[in-house]
Image 1 (cartoon, rainbow, N blue to C red):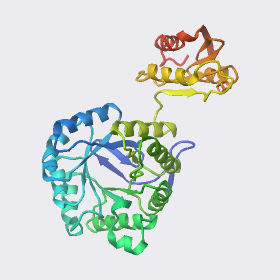
Image 2: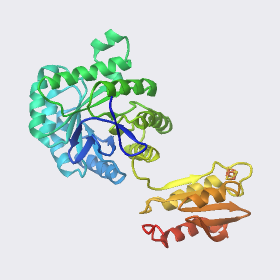
Image 3: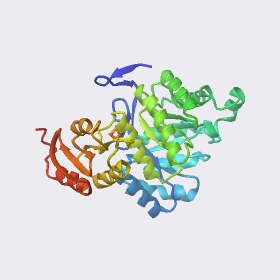
Image 4: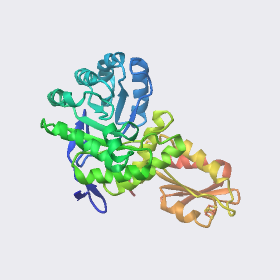
Length: 365
Ligand code: SF4
């Protein structure tokens, strides 16, 4: 694997770039966040409503499941009306791949473990995708690994996942088609990390990161953050999908937050709040929640410190754009390192908002 310097101290695995509609994936493109709709794709209005919600939450690429002809028939309207590129997710039926390409989908995901007779159709699929400028994601999943590889490896090991993906890629490569991105998902972050590391060393395709079936919101968030954090910090990964047993908007929020935490996309709101302790002179949990809610959607990225006492409070509050250090029923309000006011506890949130609104944050002075 070759790493390229993206400005100190960031390294990124060198790979090809594919275009998923208007969104570049791989190369030096920013890492994109994607999600998947949970509606019946054949219910076009509901699907477009959910895509609009995901778009508003920051989703950059959306995938829709295509398990039936009714779903395939819905693709032209969905692809035409969505504001973000739509990927058709195809299992079992090669003919839906052609339908998705004809429908104007920005990409197609195929699962080599599930698509039967797929290998015979590769030339046709490669020709259709190439003519339409549509990339293909080879999406290997531990839960549906090719039976041949399950027999060979005994279970979905990193080696088995990688072999499945690279075998499928080789079929496309035989026909000169390399407009490919790959995922090798597993529910266990340790296996998943090992699989992506191996894959990163053995090909130059862009990689779609995912911990599959990561679980409910809390567990899935932790698993995804751990796995993506390890890989992205090592320069591996070009687009991410957080899989949660929760509404897909949550997946997008978590994905965006992971990228922001790693400095891979500009921060929006960052709350620096202390965990509270026996010295706290304010209900820090409540105050942090209230400040978070009050600044949600604030148009300028800000770092806001919410601190429970004077031990670390003034230091953190001074480092942030805005901050409060609490004590004795009052809050010292900081703006860009200076104490500007001291207000009663009940006025802390309103004062922070007022101070935020009164500044031109684009002016660095
Ligand atoms: S800032 Fe004060 S209250 Fe908060 S954790 Fe630190 S010492 Fe405790």
